[in-house]
Amino acid sequence: MYSTQSLTESNELDDYKTLLDTGMRQRIKQIAKLLMVLILPVATLIVFAGIQTASAIREESRASRAASDLQQYFLIDQLITNLQVERGITATYLSSNETNKDAYEKMLHIQNATTKIFYSVETWPSGGLKVREEIYETKEDLLNKIIEFRKKPQKNVNGTMFYYTYIINELMSWTARFIDLPIGLKNFDLVAIVALLASGNEIGIQRGFVCWKPDKLSYCKILNYLNNTCQGSSWITSCNMSPNDLAYLTKATNQNDLWLRLSFMYSSYVEKTHKLKIKEISNIFTSILTIKEFLMGSNFVNDCLKFSSAERNELANKWFEHNTIYLDKIQELRVELSVKIKEEIEDIVNSTKRIQIIYTTVLTAVVLICISLCIWYTHCVNSLTYKVASYAVHKAEKSKELAKEKKKTEVLLYQMLPKSVAESLKKKKPVKAEFFESATIFFSDIVGFTEIAAKSSPQELVELLNGLYSMFDKTIGKYNLYKVETIGDAYMVASGVPEPFKQHAQEMCIFALEIRESLSHCYVPHLPDEVLYVRIGIHSGQCCAGIVGIKMPRYCLFGDTVEIFFIKFVQA
Image 1: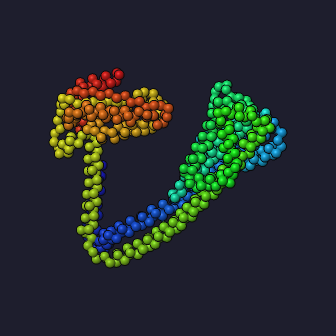
Image 2: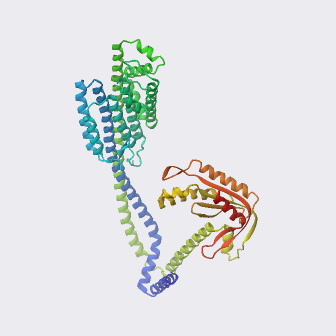
Image 3: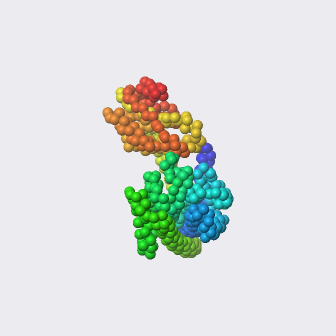
């Protein structure tokens, strides 16, 4: 390696001598050297313009891709909306014992519309969509399952609600994850529209479960109550609401309020427009709040029994109709917000295209101007001297490379050895082994490392140890400590060497406490359910320390304190 490098340097010197002895070529090199004065800022300008142009092209591509992603998002949004409507109208049809022809026709219409949207959707989760325990690898798999469910005879109301709700929830949890928004378009409105979608879903569930007679088993599942307290009767028409029923209604109401507040927090436009929508249906919205207050009242049963059967049926119908109107307003708001987002991203796409054109034009102009300047400058400096300038540049580059390599060597040396020891080695002073009357040793390892290693790939294991020991290394920098070595999952630190001080034990204990605090809630990154426990041991006593080895020298600790402590630590 060294002979090749020497040969290369010799060849370079021969080339310089040849250039100096050649008249015409010497003049050309003189010009080239002096051109550096002009080329450097010009090249910087060209590079800057090129970077800006490339950035504009990337941003335009990103904006166009985001526009396409948003188009897919709005299709998925519409798909979720259709599934919500299909859930409600199907439950309405089933609650009439399949006698409501109007509901049946609407159900068929919305089913066809939902199927068409399925075919329009082009994106799908890479790992498939998991609904309960079943994973749908493609949209066709899910659509076929829904079509199969539609044809299933003897469906019950709550089973239908239960089935659609699970699909809707999974679609909502996935939606908008794949959108990479361009710079200039904040995702606040997108978060707001997702929150509105979730709010509408909660309203739809409240609307259905208050009015329809839920099946006992599936109703218990949807409420996540694994007991036998669910009742098989309508809340309003039978005046029968169990504590679990009330808890579910309260939970759904709170979740709806939470989603609405979240949408308001992320978008002032949503909050303002929602207030206007509520004003348009103020009487209906007041009616919804009044009925909800009646349902959640502490004396619901007695108050409900005061109404006749016809009045209770009318109240249930009013609850359903008014919530439907409110849902329509929420949908209108979502549509308006969707239009607003589309307009914003279209503006950004157009803006990035304009910027791209501007930067491309500037880059072309800069290149042409620079070429013209270089030609002119070459003509002006044709007679200047080449020898001293070219030789100086050559030596400057070599000096710079040497300084850079020297700095790298020093950094590496300081990482391998204590700074005081490294300085002695640099000055070629002998570094003798030292005896320390009192020092503190720290050992740590990962509890159950063998089991974790068995569950992990080599790359995952290296990433785990790198992350853990990087945190250790950063923490060591706060204290007067020296990292001795790491072997596998074992980590060794010393305090009081090579520069003794009285508080070495206290310093080490504070370090150990900080490590323990940092790892108090730590999990294995690639095994989320695996808690990461680190065993720590500290011992103080006499030891000897010194440099061991010539190649890759290490500053090592020896003595009974180290050996006995290591054995006891391993046996613990």
